[in-house]
Image (cartoon, rainbow, N blue to C red; front, top):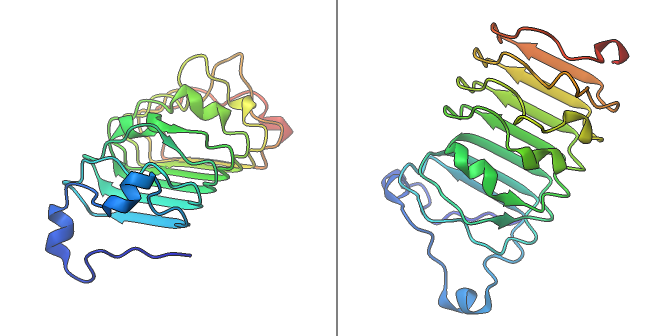
Length: 198
């Protein structure tokens, strides 16, 4: 476990932080924090530069209150847990190779209409939570199939007032699903097929 704290207790530099900086030796070797296992980026409203692109050992990533953060494609093959709160909705589409991801939590992403289609390729995902996404109208992009998440055990969707449908009529809940929570989704028109199998 590695903890990175560049600014200590000083809040102002974090609020003004715009770009990642790293030693030139790391950049030359293309090995930015090669042993880092957990990264938390919180309350950096001006941070726009992409995250380090070689986080091959990263197991847990949390990004909160970083609405300007952009990224090139991020390949995180060891990542097991991803928490995103108050981020740019386009940031979600930049993740690739999340083959080890078991837990995903998405909270308060205001312009998010649906989860990217590639998210149905999360073959190890066991827990998915979506909360307080005011523009979410459907869980997945049209044509994506929730049933492809063959390891999903827990699905929770809360405080998404514009959510009108969960999945396509042709889709069904994963057979592995054990727990389903839908709360404060007042526009939901119907429940998905397969609830009787839970």
